Length: 421
Image 1: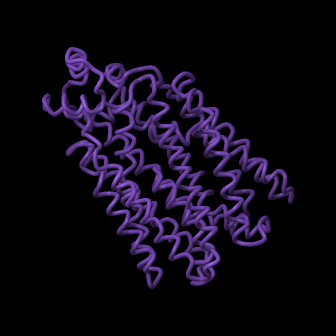
Image 2 (image 1 turned 90 degrees about the vertical axis):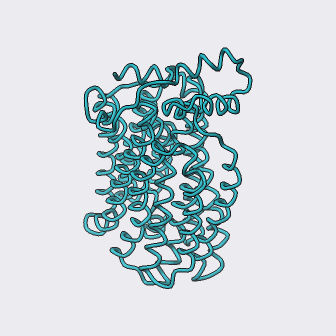
């Protein structure tokens, strides 16, 4: 998650000098910004299936190495076509990581603290975004080629992550579904060394179960869960990445930031607001539940976007910043955390990563569409209209969340699975 936050935010800053150096037009910018999102779409589909078939450890290291390769290729790109390919490779790696990380958090946590696990990895996303924004601020002074240093800098956190992941064990749940009881017991002892032999036996017995095919996701009652997994996350990405990728550029073009450094600094401030929202729900997510917080978060996003639109239309700077703050807080306390959690918690172990990968893919399809169409709609209709449309998308996210209220908080993954049979 740190790598995704780092990458998307550093690209938003890198676009400032890159746009000027390569004289990029609206269409070229949209296509370039969509490259990583299209890669994430394919990565989610591929990664989810691989993780369910070959295990949670199968992609822990290879996808980070792929990310590093894409970062190097992006930094050394001689033209727009090769930069697009480099960004696509980065996105492919990030997309493969999403269902993996979400599944690991779900399966390695208990029912009383799973929410904190998801909040924690989303804090990591914002830490990555904030770190890359600060780095971008520092590197802007290097001149027209500063974007190369920004994109290449992603190699450093990738190397750190490779080292941190090297000793993570396989999921006992996945091993039990595959009939590997000895390996499952060994993995469980590494994860929960305080368990006695009898306790471990009882836990492993609960993890066992029959294997099911992916097609059940499209049957009752799983269809309702699939809608809850796919639609709100897609709404979040259409809005969040559509705005987030272009926010520093919007500040410059609307005259709200006098230079690139100011735009990057303002962007960092609103990332901190979202992080504050996540920290607020960190100990509350498992008590208050995913559904109420996701609904409330989308509601705040609607209010914030409408305020933002009014501020731009009326040239009210206070409304612009107030709206941006409310919007950022909404993503932090709600779908910025809960959408990923719901994409894996409410599905069976043997299909968990595949379901999460499908949600990643569909959400990134929406994000790629938004990245391509956002600058075009802004040029044709104006920013206030686009922001109002985004508020409407957020409202859809809230409506679907309330209409499909499958609440994972306080339940074991096995209990949630049994309720879906």
